[in-house]
Image (tube, rainbow, N blue to C red; front, side, top):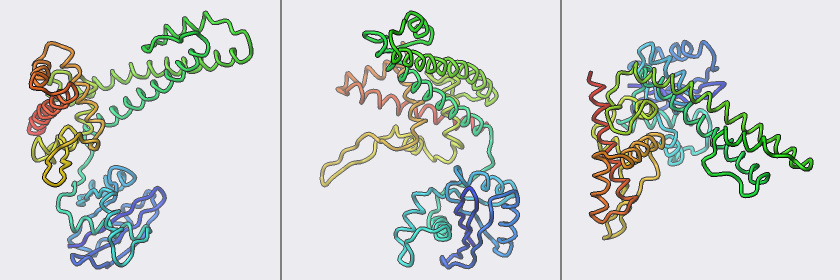
Length: 338
């Protein structure tokens, strides 16, 4: 068995071939162009059986990974953090070069049996792309509205309410009569930020329609979970990917950071909030939890019950998020088996 580690870059890809004893038996560097797959396959033809270990197969190496999977090759996704650890602990060489990075990726694949096997992109990829676009648009709107707020505070005594709509901002700007050049420029900049907010609002409306269509096409049952609408469903399906890679609901909860992590020391056993995990999934679960708490739902009853047991509001919310995570996991598993 040979493992071919790949260190992908925008302009080139470096490959290093290791045998089962972690001995380097081949190395090549190819340009990142239309013939990259064919060049690598020609290089790897004599190494049978084989698998590919691509560092960041969902990032810079995503296109190459998909090209190899499309022709029946086995491709493993190597997290950059793992290959960095191998490089750091290597007694022979710890310097960072493309060839050494490729070798490190191959070493990770040889030593870890639970790396994710890359599959062909499916409809969940469409939902992940739409969810990422939604996240970017919301972040852009937030930045624009915050900058607009700042300028309005310098133009209007006391500023405006925190929840500011484009209509209200436009009405206030029409009333302003600048007295000097500084005020004129501030008003002009405020109008530009207002234009950004309006354009983003229009883009969000159009995007929500596309997301709703894509979620309907997915025929998912995750929307049966209270608090999960089309947009949050896009986040949950898109960023969960193939849910079958999580053996249990606990593994899924650890991935989305709704499961606490152990922080024990000596005889003191304790757990704390998990700041890691997939933050987009965690955000979607939080929105679902907030929606359940705000309405008369079983989730709200569970939330109040946890507080009655002595939990704080934050602790009760975290418990509810874990409960929702388990429900989402079971729905996604049901969808996967259909």
